[in-house]
Length: 185
Picture (cartoon, rainbow, N blue to C red):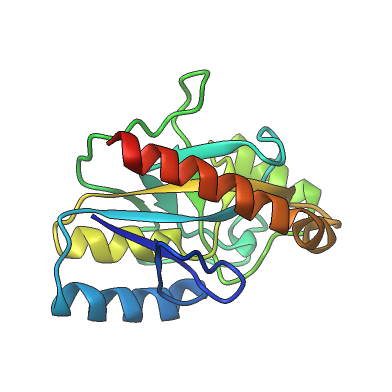
């Protein structure tokens, strides 16, 4: 298994950074897979909550969407498949209440509570910029993949300030959690 993160301010001493956003992460993960194909992929990082998840909640997911907020405003359409689920892995990707977690990825952070509610109404709980591209590359190469995320903020007008305020502690908590998960597997 290879453990990945976005990088930049999400660097961990036990992971390989792949870059921020959908494009950089997909290019760099493709290079990694071609050079040294892993048996599985674990992507870790921070995520914003559309409202139901609370800061510092830790979630697992193996499914992602790539929906831009313009979709909910009827300002766009897409000819591509914008939902992807990882090929089978042996990791539970549910919350403690049994709900499957669907993570949206975009190169933009949602800062509008009204739009966050639209994601929730469509069954999407969290937002992480890279996860859709990680699952897309993993599926193209037939590699099981999943993500572990810690919620740092709500996707509202305070998203960036709360992310900055909570990031340090969130990163420490995620590090401890992932180390324990990996050592138990």
